[in-house]
Image 1 (cartoon, one colour):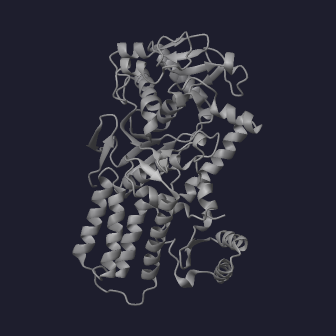
Image 2 (cartoon, one colour; image 1 turned 120 degrees about the vertical axis):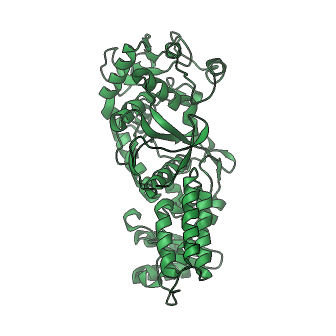
Image 3 (cartoon, one colour; image 1 turned 180 degrees about the horizontal axis):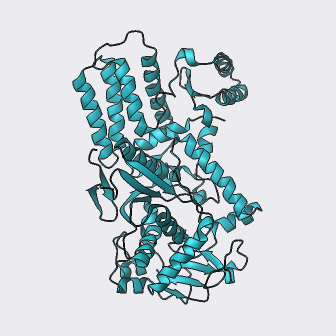
Length: 488
């Protein structure tokens, strides 16, 4: 098993990864709050986490991945730096759509899972819902109470950060800032529970009184009727399914200062041991240099990609061109370039598969160098931009007959275990295009040339329903394969 180096947000250094159990990895990835469609910025993080899992598996590890589904407790105040304020997003979404929170959660969870499939993101083996683990969350609060780390106000039960620090723990170990700096920062001009001891103390349980009187979800607890705070679910469910400590916890960089900081505090405070040994965080994705968000009008979804005629895996290819720790700038022009590059790569593979003039002998030195270089790149903190460059180097090696076509296809298939771009199944040969699809494609070509774009779009949809996509270039259009279980 080769050495893997990962940047650990907890120590702020790149470190050699060592699993707790030989050849096994416990991986927890923060999942979606299922009150609305997940946007592409969220999926950038989910792709990075999928790559992490694939790299670990490529190196021979058996990965047990857990991703939570948040269906209660995530409040709108989180955007202001105080996650125990504002409205519950699930409650808000349910009232807005005139449905129950359960119906909202079920609908958007199904959409999320379909989007994962379209982006070739492997589904985690365990995807627990917060509402199915209320008892586990209450038990965690009880454990914190035994440790003297909670207090109660008229509005809720809070984690006592001062008591946590008095025990010798560092509340801001992940964020790397002291409490005085935190006090001056994000909580300024934010309405807080006046009975809270400190503005950075966070809610473990909120009572269904006051602004939450009409809250649609509520449970009984030893402290009163209410619902859990957002951070509690991840601590309770990760421990239940992975133990404590487990190997790796991941999420977006926006989770560092609040969500993951609070997870670490409550889990460590309750049990006296770390929650996870490695913490990895993906950077933000901007849109044309601006923040992505509903208020910006640019919270694009996977459905938006498909409406514009893009293969969702073109977005995956685009994401892989930027290191997960670097900010990424999304534009439609960049996505078009990514789709063109992906299609050309698939065409190369398709051409190799039907080639009749095969090179019979590979240069073993070149083959060995490419394999080692690819492994070194992905094991160096998931350097996928470099890994993609090596893939294109493989294309050059085959064109120069330094590696046989058969070996080239085998290597490409092996590398795609990490890339997840469907380079083999997404590259049809001419013989694999069904007659009906070819007929629809020819009709669409005529419609485009005659300027009948309404008919052209209709024919494109029919082609997609038959498992193929169409990419339009300046001078021509080309077919590419969609995975049949993900089309439609």
